[in-house]
Length: 480
Image (spheres, rainbow, N blue to C red):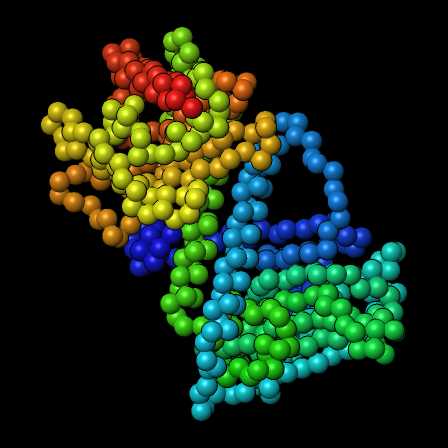
């Protein structure tokens, strides 16, 4: 969320960034790509190989599909998480667009001892024949990937003077189909080197006979391939520095993430990395609450008028759910509950609550303090609150909460820093004037005494807080 933000429990400045990769596909009339790459891997390794991963593969040519029918609870869970992952892909796309705009503002990179990328430019032409295509005469995606890997390997080898080893493929996009009879022109050039690795950008253009004569190309594929190389002792070889040429930018409208490391200043690139981390952290926040709510085995332990309390045990993890019937529209309840600066109006455990950082319209970081209990220091929290509106009427509004570590707000001697693992609200619409509000909390040591007191009947603090929440929502609802 900023260069100073990490998941709760992590050491700021010393954490590893692990972002998930999701494959976004549409239906095409060819088999899964990579068959020939699999054979190449076995030939290179000399042993039987299996596919480990395929990163950032996108198919841009789409067809209209019927909406999916959600039958089971698991269907609804996967559907909502897929929606959240789509947000990640769209946010990543915006990151790259911002980087490209920033790169256009910077002067060209130049270093006297750097190798010109002109020397790494490789072009190859392939004719799509019947064995390269399916029964619809569309070229196999795997075949095109194999040709792209070959031309990229040759480009990388011009720097390392050895056989390069493919390590990963980034931003692989199928922009359009090619058919039997097409001439495919593959252009590869090194974008940048990073000590022991090199990135090669590949662009594929297709021509039929008429387009070939008129020189009217169809851009059908592009990708960025990362290679390294080893010597006879198995040690990684160092690649020489390269300096980009104008030919790279005019050669393709795509500017790679790593190429921007050459053309952009360090600050915007560093900010972009943390923006990607922000997207993952917000996804994790929403996904964790969604998974908790969808778990089977919730047991009802208390019923009081419009309030029900449920508990869930899984191993040594205890969670509880408070279900409230509220007589206001669901969208209004969502608006009121997602504004945590108003929570102390109904939750006595929130003494103060202030916004530390408004990341965007749906993500905010709050600093919360709680009143002291007998013999204990008052507690404080730094939490990320992520809110999501439903994509379909049957889906709930979501307000997810989890603790984060912000170096600009370190623990103080005045408070005992506490942690929220997973908490939040799901709000379902019952009618135009009523809704069901479900509050979830994965129990920590701070919450356990209150829950234990409720379950043993020695306290009604959870019911009292829920009643205060209902009263707050319905009173505020009358003002609208």
